[in-house]
Image (tube, rainbow, N blue to C red; front, side, top):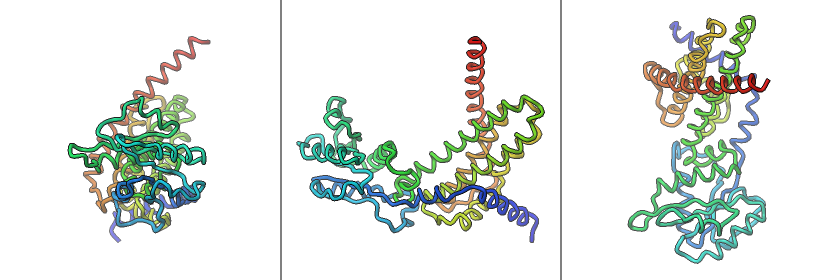
Length: 342
């Protein structure tokens, strides 16, 4: 077997071993949990069109069998206690007494309600108040009175995620329109979390005796976070939920865990108390570039080349250093405040 293949297999096995230490069962359960997202409207074709928009997106051909979203006429509310989210579709220029009554009834039943208002322009604040306590999203029409599908989809995705009534992994796994937004959010959140963690341990490394054990801990924590992020992206994209099957594939996507280990290589050997900004930049960049590579493969089957990985990594290092300087500035400000208070 060629040397590179041996290294790749060894790296893949190392990542799977690391992930075995993480209990992924709660993550898988959350992603696979069915939910009910119901659209109600007197204009049933319009409501069905909005439902169809949520089934369009990355890997839309690969959707788990659970039907979680549907369109219903205004008077067809049945067993609201089984419903997590209700979207009441209305038009700005229509009498909406029945829609308002339905929204209020659903709110009283404990259902999170989103009012999707089809309008020519953004709804004035004083008109939004009539829908309280429901949230309102405006779905703009074009010059000919037709719905702007792309904008409507983005607006619905953002507003439904904002309700926080259904786990975002479940929304993405079952509804392709959510997949890009959720995956990007996972990458950004994990890269930032790893940067913050690395910053915290970097501050502790000012004390020389703490340097070696903290660097070893960093390696494990960063690797676990990156591996779990990758698994979540796969779940969000509708791939198999069996992590023993999917993780070797994901590890191979980044060239035998090149980026999973990049952060660790950058952490070892740093002089205690120095190199804090580069260290945080490495933690952020290794995570971000890994997530980007995984996202592209899951979404498009694109295997990012080594050169492209390096370019993504180098670009992310710049962002990571900016994050590090921001964290350092806040830390110094807090320190000055604490010293002044003593």
